[in-house]
Amino acid sequence: MTNDEILTTLENVKQLLQDNKSLKIGDLTLNLKANNELAVIGWTNFIHFENLTKRQSLIELNEIKDLFRLMLNSSKDFADFAENKTIIYFLNYDDAGKCGIEICSEENGQIFWQAQLRED
Image (tube, rainbow, N blue to C red):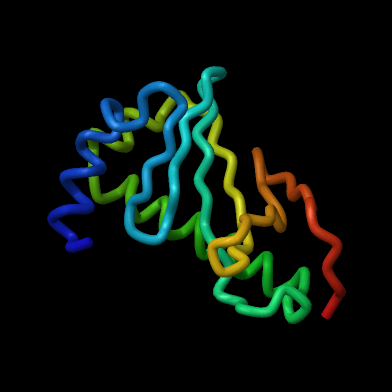
């Protein structure tokens, strides 16, 4: 997806996220919940689940947040759309397309662990 395509998608995100559908924009997937929550989902770069650690997962979660902020800064329309939403960030693991495993999430600065990971 080119930068121009991403910007066009960001400008039209309100129409594209209707009916609780997911929308992939670049490396992130967005999902608008009925209760005004916007889920921002990113995927770990790790291929083997057993190599994941809590510290590395938090680094990747912060990268997801940074990328989302970049999207907000790139499109006023998208920033206006997200302004009054509760944003929940998710880091997921993709098992080669077989399933998606939630690793951790962050809402209002609080981290929630869904997967048992080893400490560093």
